[in-house]
Length: 283
Ligand code: ADP
Ligand code: MG
Image (cartoon, rainbow, N blue to C red; front, top):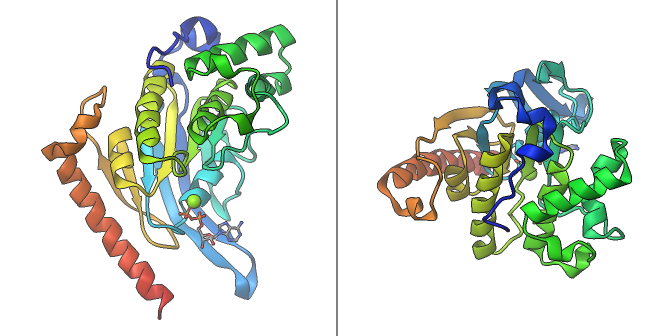
């Protein structure tokens, strides 16, 4: 991805005059999520309340199956809570919307569309003209360093490149919130590190709120302002850890004593939760 991120100010009129404080405020109040009904129902997320401030970078960290995706999907509007409410910028979430961009672990691009058309899809659905769609798509493609690949198809790109397209496609709707579900989970370690650094550049340029789900402790600490640690299933947030590492973040920080101390706190909690989950499954 381009380390020289293209300036977005001129391309994002509604943000040009807005401060970061104006968009991407998430309030989760007493949300409980249960799948199924009656005897076969199962609770995925315990009653949870949470506030994420505009422009924050928050990672949700927890063992597999603890309800991270379910909680994220309730912000996206793909999952309706059984009780409680989710609000984004004072509006109750009842369905997916262009104010909340989503990036999944599977690249989920349209295989029959070119890279440019994949990115232009959202703006097109929003009713923008062909000229506008093309201009927006080219801007975001340049931002993720893939201009040369505009007319290729997803299958012709590597996993890392496809995920950059996924991010560009989500951002092309000018969302106030970017929701990411283990987006770099399928990438090799080297590509993953590069993607993390570049996501941080985009985030600082864009001023967007990011909620990023991962089960990788290093990734969570490197990226986040706050790491929310979830308990084993049914999930609830058991810790809200402030990450005071300075920005811009540098991969070299990962070997520093402050990073190590934070990692120790996270690992101890995750280990205790994983053990608890294992014992529950084997009871
Ligand atoms: P994580 O993302 O932390 O791995 P998930 O949020 O995917 O966990 O899943 C949490 C729990 O909810 C799991 O037990 C999973 O099987 C269950 N679950 C997730 N989605 C559904 C669904 N659509 N229907 C029924 N159960 C589900
Ligand atoms: Mg998941």
